[in-house]
Image 1 (cartoon, rainbow, N blue to C red):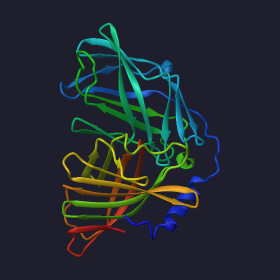
Image 2: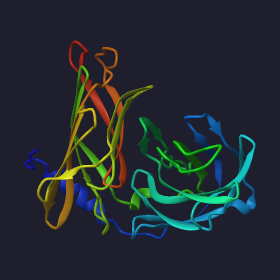
Image 3: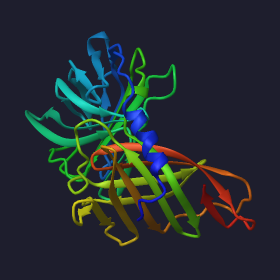
Image 4: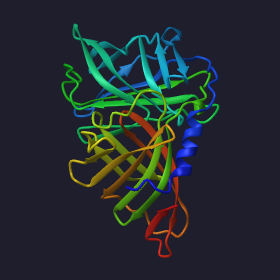
Amino acid sequence: MRVRGWSLILLLAARGAAAHIVPIPNSQCALDPVEIVAPASGVTATVASPTAADEFVIHWDPGTLQAQFTGVPARTFTAAGVSGTFALPTIFPATFTHGGDLIASVPVFFAMNGSTVAVPLTLTTGLWAAGGTVVEGAPIGPPPDGRFTLVGITAGSGLGPPFGPGMLSVQLSCQAVPRPDPDQFAWQTTPVSASLNGQILRLRAIFAPAGTTAPNFAGTPAILRLTLPGAVITTAYVPNGLTPHGRNLFIGRSDDGGTAWGIRTLRRNGQTSFLMALRIKGATPPAATTTSVPADVVYEVGGFVSRMSLAFRANRKGTRLRFP
């Protein structure tokens, strides 16, 4: 992976990180709908509809690149004849990005059958995976839509019946009113190149986080999904994260060997960015076409979530796609 040739991209990323901070009004929100599912057994909870007492506040802080969830109340549910409550921490932070994405690692407390169990979950508007199952949330939409969906999944919840002790999936939707402006929040991704040739996807991009929190490439899973209109082309998952090779290079491979994922640190004029390169085998090629094909990429790496859009160009036979 070479650094030469990306000066302009890094300069643009640096300018974006230096944007002026303007206060953003707090938002009111209530979780609705809420889905709690044990995929192995098919048990699904019925969660009580929200009332005015179920609203909480989200404080948006561009200075720390975070959203602070405050006053989140517990909610009641029933599942397979068992009644209980689930609760998030009363106050917790989530990283918020320019693309409207949120990610937070929190304990979710389930009280039922006379006991309370804390289930550690990463809740994200991006992607998460466990036990071969991938779940995907939804970021805050374009104005005026403030709706987003957080998802989380774990291979072992530790819960008793009717959910546990195996896999548990949680989906939490919310309408933030007023909608926050994510333009002041950093972590933007700029695609450099991509190709889809048969079942092999190659992708390079530069991302430029801001703030004081450094990506934890070695300590968190890496996951990516590329979709064309109406179809998932490929999903890459490196559950153990990326291993450091020296100070500036991180490399990881999927358990099946089909994904090779590398990240190199780039430093220029006091700014730190990262070059990301992937080679993924086993992609599902779309039908041959000679027209431009839009594609969307969402990924999580280092504990952060981001996304980008591509416009693939087809070769004359329509059998290979390239960007740019």
